Image 1 (cartoon, rainbow, N blue to C red):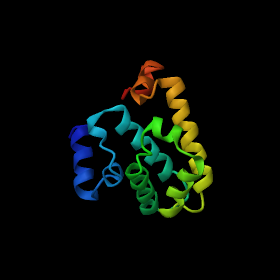
Image 2: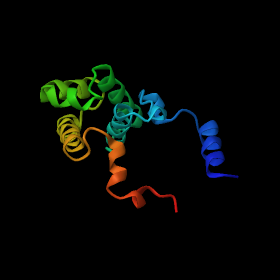
Image 3: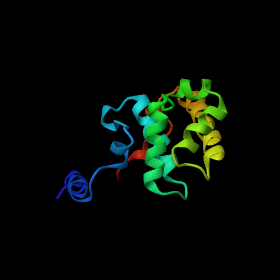
Image 4: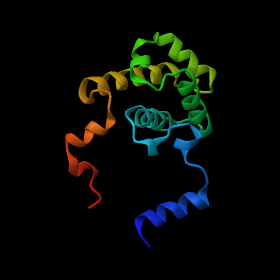
Length: 128
């Protein structure tokens, strides 16, 4: 059984991917979708119920806050409000700041494209 077969079997038996639930279309392999998935992964990494992290990620997308340029142009407190209003209360301010810092880092280091990380060290992503 190949690695792809194992992944497909896990998805079939375990249900919907978090990325799908939050609306991150990673299969498109576009900078915006990959950034949204990274944003979702950041939300999922906190000590918070996964359903609330997914809800917050969906709300960020709904508010166009899954785009680096929009995040950087949005008032900090507006971003906090989106997180807070969507169940991400305990970590709303800290997470809003971290997401803004991450967006700026992506802009400065990778020109808004997560795929440019591959240019840093291709071995980082190798399977072998």
